[in-house]
Image 1: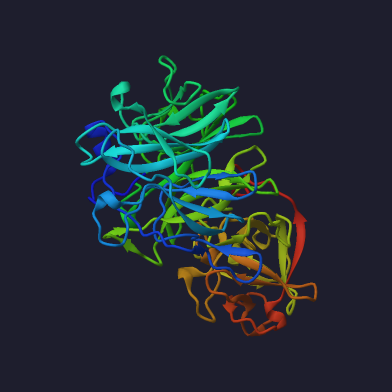
Image 2: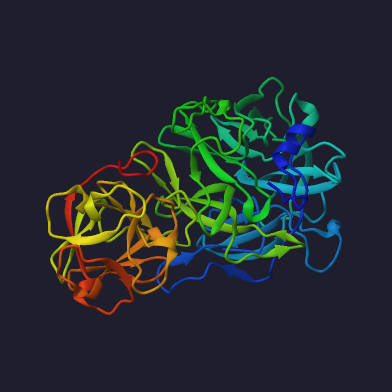
Amino acid sequence: MADDDSGVDRRSVLKTIGVGALGTAGGVASSGSASGSTDGSTHYHNELYGPHFPDPTIHRDDSGTWWAYGTNMNRDDGSNDSAERLVPILRSDNLHEWTYVGEAFGSRPGWTYGSIWAPDIHYYDGEWVMFYSLSPRPWESGEFGIGLAKSDTPDGPFTDYGQIIGDTDHAGGGTIDGYFVEYDGTPYLFWGSFQGIYVMELTADLQDWRSGTLQQVAGDAYEGSTVFSRNGYWYLFVATGTCCGGYSSTYEVEVGRSTDFFGPYTDPSGTDMLNYDSDNAGIAQLTANDRFVAPAHGDITTDDNGKDWFVYHAYDANAQEYVDGVPARKFFVDRVEWTDDDWPIIGGDKTPSLQSVEPNTTDTGILADGIYEIENVNSGKLLEVADAGTSDGDNVRQWNANDCTCQRWWVEYIGGGEYRIFNQNSTRALDVPDGSTADGASLQQWAWWTGGPQKWDIVENGDGTYRIRNVASGKVADVNNASTADGADVIQWSWNGGDNQKWNFNFVETVQPTDDGRPW
């Protein structure tokens, strides 16, 4: 949710005081435009906007322009907190290059003095409607609640219609993080922060809620709801963990689904999300990797090709920035892939991507997913795990074909030009150990941990062969000293065009991955 510069475990505080999220600190919004850097092709690089744009919500207008709105950000001119930005707005024509537009409000909503968090934007009944969370200042002093504002245009200004619901209107607390859905012609609002996720029916003008319709749909582990309908299911995307402790935060996204709008919402293990009351207890569909920390609290949109995209915030551990002494949460977007049985996987491997194919373009790999024997062009021998090992750190080498499953590899496209390569025998991933970038580092197998050293670009050489380039190091798989002997070590080395760096992918069979994205 909003920033926490106190070092306090916000979820513990919420449970103790019975109200919403705590603390705020701001960010700096730039004028002009910002985007993720590109590589000159059809790729973009996360993150897309910074240094600070938490809790993004997104909607696309009829002209095709996307509009994103975030939690408040302090100005950088030294003024006090009364001058914080009142919901910053970004716009984009392509979903990956963003321009700062201004603020949603011309003046602070007046029903309590506080900070505006977690806006939720939709176009409904001919108007742009925004539900926002408002926290009192100081945060111990009053009631948390959700308000409504409307505008004729997405860039505002938005007219405030005051509070819709607050902590004193029901038995629990955590009355923030609203998400609006129209279902069967009736308006509803999902909301909640670490004291249950709820849904309630709204009045036709959206300015109040109908008594007796409040229903809990998920447990105390969650906040930041997003609701999405697809293929006969309603999906409840929620954030769990710690959002605002900087680079040690544990925020991530979990997902439940139901064939009924009102639930029960169950996760991929079949567990009713009402039963989750502990942080990070369920199955993550988006979680941290070695660079991007605490990815969560976002929204979903769909591009021109019918591909779904999740916008969210995360910390960048490799480019740490601080705004008013608080670590900055930056703006990300990643594609949502769907398994054959309709579960979402965000970013291709459930972690933030550094690079991905741009929205509105076709993102397909050059090899179909499946089991392959990977043959060195120079030696004619196959890539294998030594001695059919199944342990982390086992050596990867070449050997004459012998029908061992240790010589067969599940090759899976994860988007953005990147693949992961699992050994069929061990179910471990091809890996450059310790993230080495040195020529000569031996390749090994390790359990999948989502890092760049386990991701590979498979590049066509123009002669029907391929090179296997490590995403983290930029170096390619190479048979040491161009050996043709059984047992020769497979290493990484700078590309030099030698046949010992070229590989054939000989297709064996197709295997469907499981719900968690693994092939077995």
